[in-house]
Image (cartoon, rainbow, N blue to C red):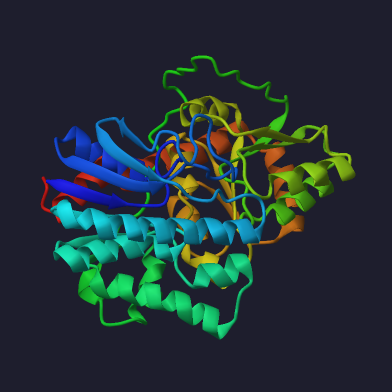
Length: 404
């Protein structure tokens, strides 16, 4: 089959849609990805990429067209320009491209912003082919939660895109079961809905480490609570840093942050202003293949989100990655993510924003017998094998799209 894959983000940006495109290519399908110039999460173009650099390339057998867009930068104005630049350029590209290119199916990886789905909807309407949409972010709820925007006209503008996306999708894949209520508010789409979670990256802490020229940082000694992923506005770092401040005198407790993002500079400034250099370590962003090594160094993995009604609907993808690494998980969030941790019996959960509770629990866990941590890690891996193995998830997608 010939697939048109629409997503603002694609490799080397780390999203699960990469796995889908590469998987289909491995199975002999013709996959064409239309994405933006990679700049997530740091907000600047990756080395070797630019508006007029590497516009077209083949990655693992996948044809990739990278459209010139404005990078995210580090403020809301730049982020808004980034969102609309992809929407406008991709919409125009697909409008012209559809004249002479016929695909059998359109697949949209719909993250933020929702407008990234519009080029896929356009192609479906022009060519009448099936449209599969994988919803990983709810809009306009995400705009309110992360951006603080409540203007009814602005929200109404984005609801138009959501309505078109759901209406014209043949199947709507939900990364969280809790998305169903929101989606059904736009119409009777019960027959379209399929629960399709994000999987773990499959990287085992005991796997082979292929580093090439990358240099691994020195990991501090002590009881290590590690957060790995995008250091974003939604990820509860006010809570984490205040917990670190409350445990400042507990020198054996080390808070380790692996990743980059819009909130990293704030975290680094907080560390300096509060004299936390001995207990809080921001290591930066590293390639995905190095994550097994980082996870292996940790005693407990952290997953955190802000206290917002929207975030109660999410089970962050990093949960499955932590599970795959056989690590106990400390979750500071509400809703579905916390439910997954409790269901798997693979760690501990606290309400979002509970800095005092996090500090107390960090101290308690630092004195916990290692066998308890190991048992939680064992439960995590078992749950991962049952629900989040990449190969099983990809095979299920093939089946529902009748590709198997």
